[in-house]
Length: 148
Image (tube, rainbow, N blue to C red; front, side):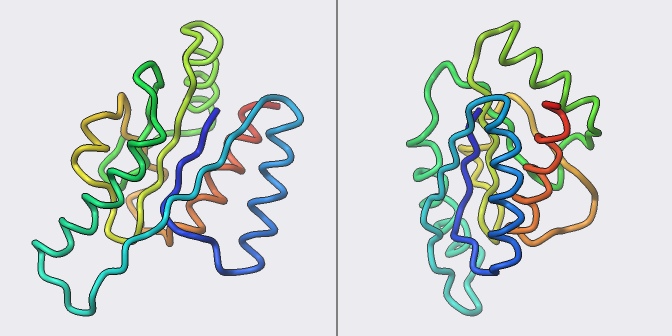
């Protein structure tokens, strides 16, 4: 399993939580976490500038995805899922299809259209907006539960 995220985690409490859940997951299966650099968004950036930022981050994300990977993009417009959905997804993709399951969390502006197009699934945890570092910890917590 692979997790690709944009940006570093600055908050110590989130780094601790993320490390805890990564350790729980790694007790049962492999987990690779890749942090790609976030692109600086200028203050008051135009829509065109925001699209440019997402495109740069998107290329960085896509450089870590292989052709045979099964990609799940976390985005607010995705399908809302629960723990059983995640458990089934992990089982189906990793064990039955023998594909690597790749979860992608974008930067503060979201994911580029190219990343969304490459994904086989768009997943949402809620209609609410969460900070991306917190979303990373929430995803890992759910993956740890799903793999118990």
